[in-house]
Image 1 (cartoon, helix red, strand yellow):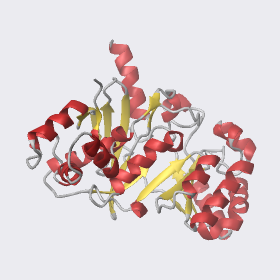
Image 2 (cartoon, rainbow, N blue to C red; image 1 turned 45 degrees about the horizontal axis):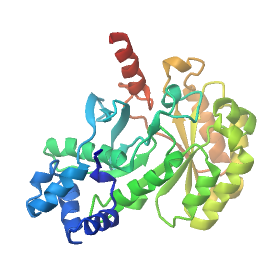
Image 3 (cartoon, one colour; image 1 turned 60 degrees about the vertical axis):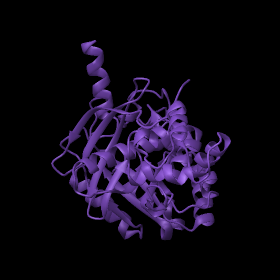
Image 4 (cartoon, rainbow, N blue to C red; image 1 turned 90 degrees about the horizontal axis):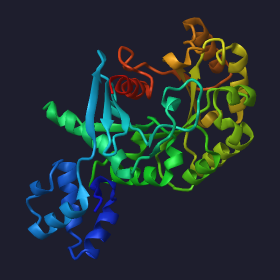
Length: 356
């Protein structure tokens, strides 16, 4: 029998499963308390469960499925974890320290098929989706690391911006949100959670209909179709004519601000001309828009791209501000380690191939 991660069950899902297997409903709350409040890693540690219940859990579920393969620590406190899954695949998870709390960036897929030409995540094609349990367990492993340091720190913010396209693993992503947001579990507030999509228009509309307060970010990176298609092949399927109406639908439905992510690539998308085009593109939605300008972390395999100069970044920022577009330049984290998403995983896989 293949055992699945118990972290993949929502509280309602666990309750239903227990009742179907002859257990009392209240056991679900007890189990969640052990998992997310006391954070045990073995069912035998759940002292207020009877033996039959513990045996049942052990027959069907596991708590730990991820194995830490590599841990890189930056001078600024950023920690990048490389986790090995039960099937041998590798994923990345990143802990970042900010003045507002501790944020974890999680991965949703093994590899990525979106094909952004500047991104390390897409160097290795999608192998499979992660289960909701595997996504939750990334948070739990980081929290266990924090617990081991004895500083009483907790993960307070989540960004779903790791390897993969979250909206291409939509159902598992939504179950992940339900688990980490539940007040009886990790109780991470919806407004402290942000999910990023490369622009799957139909899923943006579906997400708008969820009626949840989780923040949405859209990886835009170019203000016109020609340039966006050149650097993001997803634009062939969802050009701006499809993407922007979906964003309008989201804004009208939720009245929540969207963040537009824009990686600045030297002499590619960082001219004043692109800044003006971007301002025009967002003009009618600027009251609910924020542009996050991101300095590029060079990737060896994408050596056609370089980081924009400081002068270009300043001019781009200034042009957007002059046109009334709220924007900022993202503070960099972990620049002294494999900062670009997917870089550590790619290097480790290459290393394994060389040594095997």
